[in-house]
Amino acid sequence: MSLPSVLDTIDHSLPEATDRLLELLRIPSISTDPAFKADCDRAADWLVEDLKTIGFDAAKRMTPGHPMVVAHAGTTGPHILFYGHYDVQPVDPLNLWDRDPFDPQVQDTAKGRVIRGRGSADDKGQLMTFIEACRAWKTVHGTLPGRITIFLEGEEESGSPSLIPFMQENAEELRSDIALICDTGMFDSKTPAIVTMLRGLSKCELTVHAANKDLHSGMFGGPAMNPIRVLTKILGTLHDDQGRVTIPGFYDDVEELPDAVRQQWQNLAFDHAAFLGDVDLSVPAGEQDRTPLEQIWSRPTAEINGIWGGYTGAGFKTVLPAEAHAKISFRLVSKMDPDKINNAFEAWFKAQLPADCSVEFKDVNGSPASVMSIDDPAFEKARKALSEEWGTEAAYVGAGGSIPIAGYFKDILGMDAMLIGFGRDDDQMHSPNEKYDVESFHKGIRSWARILDKLM
Ligand SMILES: [Zn+2]
Image (cartoon, rainbow, N blue to C red; front, side, top):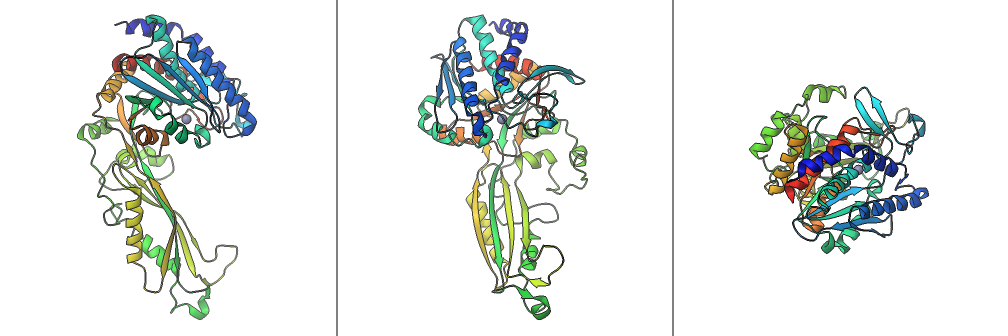
């Protein structure tokens, strides 16, 4: 095979690849602000033209919002779908930028060379790693490896309103053997990662009602029940003293980690004390028998996100309020069903209510976790390719928050997604002075070439 020639081509053409990225970064494709609509369009056009130069059948596809870019190449072999997004976050506060966010530049810093500019890490720099890998492949082989579909969105930073309808309408065209998503980060600056678990979320708001009106504590204090007391008493037992959630059945659908994955996580360099220390905390609050990484990536949570009632203004009012409120959310893992969890919480809460209090639930909704089936050999192939490129064993990791696109690929197209990205913690995505390390860009391109070589 001529993978070495492809890697060589990538090394030699890095200056040109960087110039192309800088050109894309100069287009201020801020999706959330209508003032930049024409620029979003221009970014899509730029990508279509660029993809055509490397043999893709590429087109801008209109939606009610910003256009999608869809490009196909190859007719035989495994079919891979690559996803990225060309839109960027707004740039304010502008005065905190050291330079014009849309006049990108390669800079030398104490930590190495970086590409500075809005979108450099999120996600233009990342999506170009894949396109540049395809370009180098084409240069060496004259064709692209296997069937590749590139799918680029222009509304990721503004809630992806057109994404689901577009995927539904074009499901046949987009469905592939596996999806590759490049919009995440490395575990640390040396350790590449594939995100295979994304936690889901369910949530609700609740109101406890007691007396039929607000009461004076001088008149009713004592005999009358205070709904804030009811609310805090019940919510105070949501966790036991081992950090476990006490709702019956809460853990029923939580699967244990495969041993191999648990082992990988134990081998990752993660400073638990520093993790809490960074936010000025030191006492672990989660499940006592689980490591923090396990808790964040593979365990569910229950959190009280807001709680209010009675008088909270200036001064004082000795009120016994008629009602009390809270907002509650649950991070979900493995097979946990959001409806089942919300129902279990409601039943648990109601069972503890005093006889003449009532509770109302509203805004009850949720979405399940996404867990990729890593027994698909494609995952091990990609992990091996990443390990070879970075000289460090790549890890399967989880993500504590949600990345909706991965779930959409599964639900709408029935395919697993590999989330592989080369961002770093200090990239300042969504913040002033966003950057992407030149090393991430360069080795990211090389990583994709190695992954394509193994997958095709
Ligand atoms: Zn992104």
